[in-house]
Length: 217
Image (cartoon, rainbow, N blue to C red):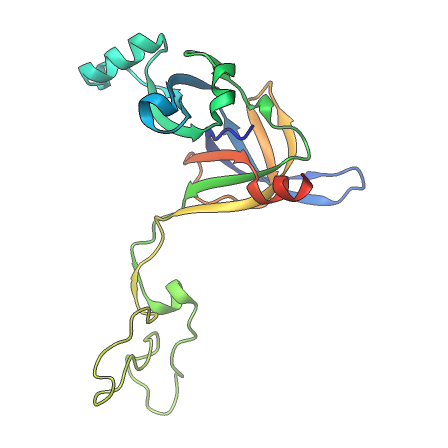
């Protein structure tokens, strides 16, 4: 069963394996998540769970949101996220049920989704890694420019997809096949090998890997 859990990125550190090799890991606080709604094929056209994560003060909710959580019997949550499940698996869950990070085990592979750091309007050197112009032979005020972007007579326009300056970052990114190095339920965190998109304290979504699990099975 592949459930998309909600959590926060804590930051990066390093651990040592049995042979003394250094492993760079990202610490993720995952869950607990609570089932606040069940979507069925008959009512919604597909089957899914709506999970809630992170407490929020009741005074910050709309009246309709308060009623929604009261019906579910769950304290108000800051983040709601759908996770698809098979129709036959939907009966294994109840409204208000708590789902913890213990669904992940050491050695599992996971996909982690986060929002990358926003870098605003960036130039071509920062955004695309261009080398810039040579700083010699009379070059003035052109060191970090992108160079020519198109001819005048033909095609008399700039082709779509041309690498130019523009908005950089603040995009939803999924990193696949990160290995779970350790699970620490007492602290509510898991350690995954490698980097995860987004800033520290940013929200992330973790689920069992699609490709790795499919390859094993």
